[in-house]
Length: 437
Image 1 (cartoon, rainbow, N blue to C red):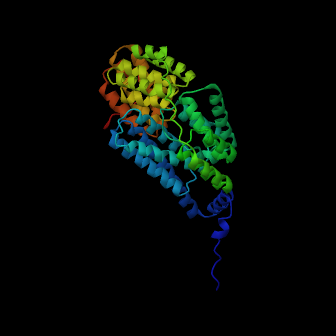
Image 2: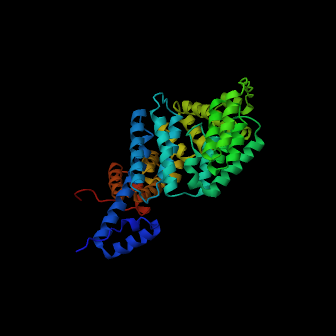
Image 3: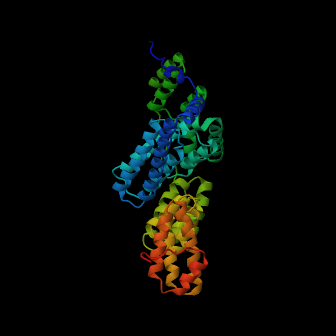
């Protein structure tokens, strides 16, 4: 009897969509196979959920614990990517990159342990984008924000994201780089644009453009060697040899003079005298226009965080500043870490409860308690409304039973406040029966 034909070589020639259709059709006929696939799907989903939970709690940890938790998230990402997971891992990977970047602005990472995690996170994000390309315009916008408005990290290699960016994403970056080069005669933004222009030439494979960019730089050994490597890789060996010969005999030129120090903007002086959200955002607007925000943001934000550690009012100012930059995640973490005022935390919770309901439960509970302590009818009515909201948040978080337990305890503690109990009932909230009743 002949052995069965090994179909694996043939299956490897099929595209992923065809394989998925074949496997799905077979799973519909084979209950055991379907169950096995569902189990694998559920495991991957729970792994990603656990990774998000670790990131939610990591912000409150010390440096060592933070690095350990983020390391676990990165291990999960790598394991799923190595296994060829079909899950969209890019959102988790990008959140990890953004979280670590923000943390590096707040801690003293002299050991470099957290920075090492950032480098690994960027590599995994690039892999996740290649596996399941996100919207190219959004990816390009993120890269441009990191490069032109970020704190100087993470380091991004365009080549790693090139296939995910595609023609549309590359064109978006090229357009922004060209605009910056045309508008900025000097400064940090122009330096960034010049570096990106070089990377774009490499990604596009435009050898002549890349050699021209490199040749325009001040003569250095590393630049000359790169020109030689580029020409050799393109098969232009005679040009490579000629350039190497010229580089060896070229006289060493004097180092260019250091750039003149830029004047301190007026908005910076105002911020230093009165560091608030308003002066921070005014400094941001002026610095963005002048291409100096990368350098200004780090020191200004460090000042706001320093003040936030000392008072609730200052913590609120920090949160408002981050919200003014459309950095909602950073604002939430700052509110938690620096104990912003309850009204501020409730405002943030209302926006955050949609995507991260479990995180907002403690805030709403604090709000309910604060309203009850006022001991007046209007506050009791508002507390009941907040309890309805809290019930919804528990359901979204998959914690409906925990709400019943919480409500039962709350009612037991405040059972003598008949007006409160009446408002809760009027809000159509089912009050659990006491144990043993």
